[in-house]
Structures are given as C-alpha cells and as structure tokens.
Amino acid sequence: MWEPYLRTKLPAPTEQDRDRLEAFAGGPLPAGYWALATAHQGEALDEDLVRDPSFPTFILLLVAPLDRLEKAERSYAIAFAIDHMMPRYPAGLLPFADDTGGNLFAFDYRADPAAPSIVFIDHELDGEDGITPVAPDFASLLRRIGLTPP
Image (tube, rainbow, N blue to C red; front, side, top):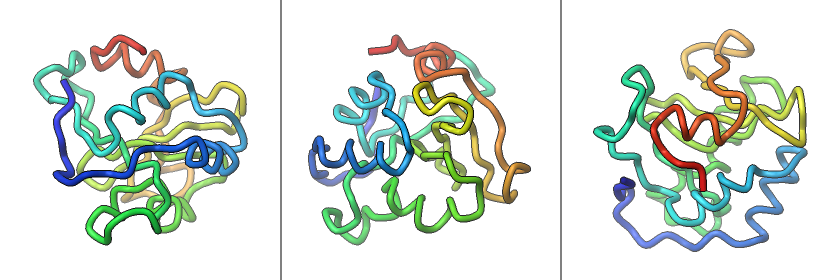
C-alpha cells in the first residue's frame, strides 16, 4: 500500500518531533496522522490503490528536524516546507504531504486549532489563491483516497 519513495534509512519520529510540530501548528496533530507518519514517513501511497482518480498521489513528509536528516532528504521534510514555502501562505497551515509536483497537503488550523481541516496548497499561487479545501478532517481524507483511518 505504501512504497518507499526515499530509499534511505530515516530517523524514527520522536515525541519531541511531535511536540515541535504541534507548537508550530498551534494545536494537536490528528492521532491518525501521527500513527501514519510514524509508520510511513517518506513513503508514497501506491497510485493503483487510490479510490478517487482525481486525487493526486502523495508522499508523507519527514517529521524530523533538518539537523537530523541527510542533505538529500531535507527537501522532503516538513521543516523544509515551512522554511521555504509556507512564508507565502497564511499562518495556521502545517504541511504534511507532497504531491510529487511541488504542491503540498496541509492541516488547516485557522478555523479550529483542536480539529484541523485538510487543504491543498498549489505552489504556483500565493496566499489564499493557492489554498483549496480538500477534506473536513484527516480521517475523511484517508477515506477519500481509499484508506481506513488508523
């Protein structure tokens, strides 16, 4: 179901990683997301298993900070996306996946910091113009693409 995208041994996610991401987001990470990221960070969902054909595939971004990653892995990290792409978008978005085309999926904490919705961020558009709602929550996103929430 998940295929290695980065063919390297990645550092295991830690509770400190989770705490750092939640502090940046201003709210808790969805439990289902953390379970998935812990098991599959840096992996891509098998395109043949995606139930919604209009839905792009995605790679779960790495949760480790940049100083725990090798140079070749850094561009696949949440911290890299935060530093290099997120300044162009409103605060309250936490990227968690890449569509392999430079676009991001993100948790949107702006409306409800305790229950973020999911948005797609088009890297060719800035600000609100680049943000498209995708799902009301992480479990709905998983069901949409054909996965059972953990």
